[in-house]
Image (tube, rainbow, N blue to C red; front, side):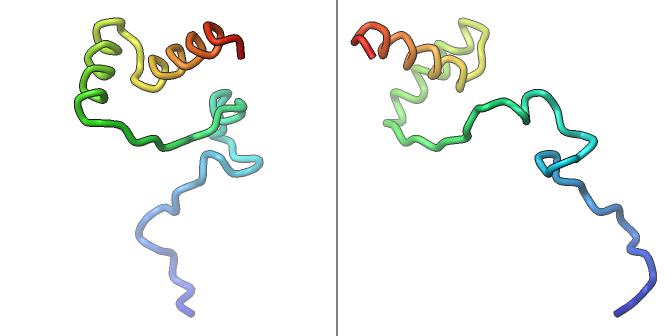
Length: 73
């Protein structure tokens, strides 16, 4: 193989073990997920989250926690 250095810097994985760029949020117990929903519902949730001043994901998480508590879970 060619021993010349590449003209670009290799990117580091911020989630890799021992990565110097690893942040507190990367260490947390949060999981990434994907959900599907009707377009109209997504639009309404997006508008509501903007009006409330929170991220889309945070808005959904708060709504889910509220529903689970209301239903006794």
